[in-house]
Length: 123
Image 1 (cartoon, rainbow, N blue to C red):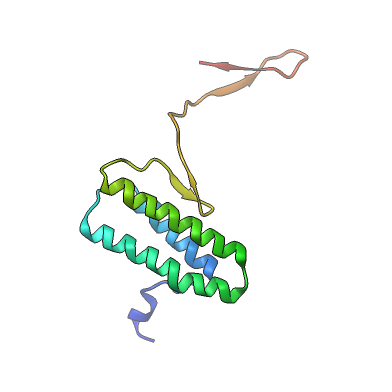
Image 2 (cartoon, helix red, strand yellow):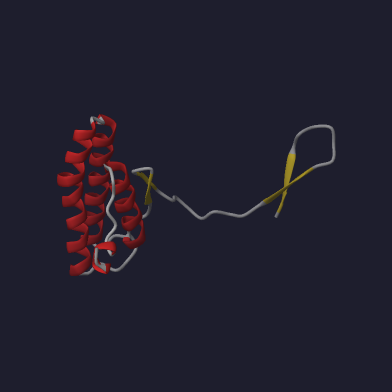
């Protein structure tokens, strides 16, 4: 084998391929939209619907096929939002869309030294 053969990641089953696409999608979801990114994104959608979906059907996993359809819908909604100029709030986690609604506030809870289990937060 040459060194070029080790350059590409070869997933062994449908789940590994889906995790790889999910990781890639989460990396570029906030990037500025370019023609190259859009072509790359559409190629990933095509791979999900063709090769990976066929592999999931051969594995006999209807749950995996359903997750592939969910991923495809999320990725297509990303395309629609980005083409209209809107930001995409959220990321993919366990092949589902997880949105962040608002800011997160850090707080440190300390236990009040009393007989009950109430906790107080210092702001």
